[in-house]
Amino acid sequence: MIGEREPGRRGVSGPPKGNVAIKLDSVELRFDQKIVLSDCTLEALRGQVTGVIGLSGAGKSTILRVMNGLRHASGGRVTVNGEDITDWPERELIEMRKGMGFSFQHAALFDSLNIAENVAYPLYEHTTLSKAEIDKRVSETLAALGLAGVEERMPSELSGGMQKRAGFARAIVNDPEIILFDEPTTGLDPIMTHIIVSTIKDIQARLKATCVVVSHDMPSMYAVSDRIAMLFEGTIIETGTPLQIRQSPNPIVQQFLQGSELGPIPL
Amino acid sequence: MIAQVAGSALGRFFAYAGGLSMMLADALRFAFTLRIRPTEILRQAFFLGVQSWPIITLTSLFTGLVISLEAAATAVSFGLQSYIGGSVAFATFRELGPMLSGIVFAGRAGAAITAALGSMKVTEQIEALQSMGASPTKVLVTPRLLACVLMLPLLTIFADIVGICAGYIMAWQRVHLSQYEYFHSVQVTVDTSDFLKGLVKAVVFGIIVSMVACYEGFNASGGADGVGKATTQAVVASIILIFAANFLLSFLLFAP
Image (cartoon, rainbow over all chains, first blue to last red; front, side):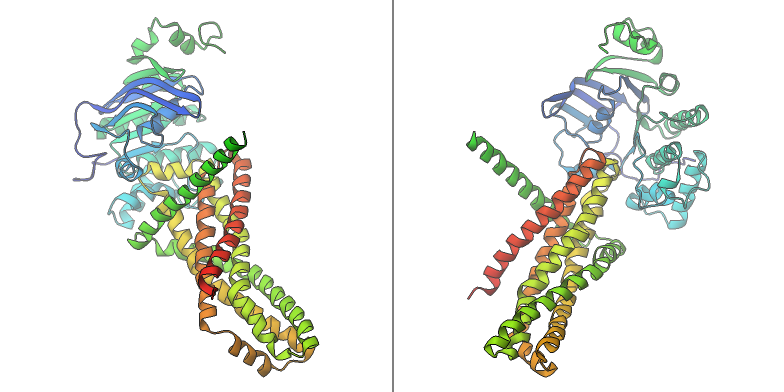
């Protein structure tokens, strides 16, 4: 499904710099008076899958948006591929995002385009591939996600799970160097969840892509992540390998993992 | 307290005006550097312009009829039947053609733009565009701006023709004015500059409708309810701005 990167293709912002692909340094984000992220520090290592877990409303999706500049940090610094993007204007952020994929929680497919056109969109925007090559790439990507034959259908004609996979296909079709996944497995059946998890691992292994996955689907997160960070009330309170997270002495992490009502997390 | 409210309203006004201006500047930048998609412009021109044609036809038809009706009644009492054509054409070219087309266009096309972009906004489709390194202004705003600027003058020309012809029908029916008398009056009363200045107004109204509609759509929030509110706001703001711009343009273009 996923071939080698095209030679000379533009990176997120130039050649890779260092081992850290994305760094949030004491990031703060406010919407009016509401604090969404506070002193949030996180590193996504290059070529690894970083999982971000946390309660609903903890700010997980917002972290992804801060990483690709869809939300501007009110404080702190955001670094992508060694470049401090915190104060970049939208025009420069648009260039940076060409090397990033984003899989949205609710797919966010363009409802005026069919599935093939949706998935092909990044290829038409940012590559010089011929239509035949794009069609082939789109068909292969869709087939790998169990969506063969839906190319001509409109998003509204697909189930929620199929839409989600089509959105996933659109995020990965141009082999981006950094891919952000917002709840990629939520709402999918176990087989599809397994396929999505395998696909993320496949991308990471073949392309050495940097992936950041946000989810509260713990089995998937254990399976897919090299490192996991726990977000609580806008702050990263724990970071480690899946095993370290499982064995964390932090009572908030343990209450979250056990799904218990009893503990320090206010309900 | 009053000063606070006034200050807040003024702040919102400048934020709104600033937002519209920045969006227009950005859209024009893409247009002038030819980073446009002709097929998308044509698609929008058809959707926004051609599909507004029936409603603009009806509006201009009835407007032409009623002006002629009123003008005929007055003209007969003063023995000035030969001025009916001129008065209808004068009002239509300078004011009613562009302004009524603009208002109807705001209600039909402006609402459609805001509803479409607002839906895209609340379903994260605009964020999806941005996340793929595409500019929403380039993809969504510029084609709509160009389609509106192209189609509203064409619709205005059509509205002018329909209005003047409708005026003739009423004049002929009410006071048995001959075709020659009516159109001769049109010819001697208005000149090409009246017609062209009306089209200048239409271009400005096209910019207003498209920009306000796109801006409101991009700022919609809160689901279907938010899209509805944004759509209403877009139509109301467009109509108010069209009236204000019409006054300003009339002052600049027609004042002696």
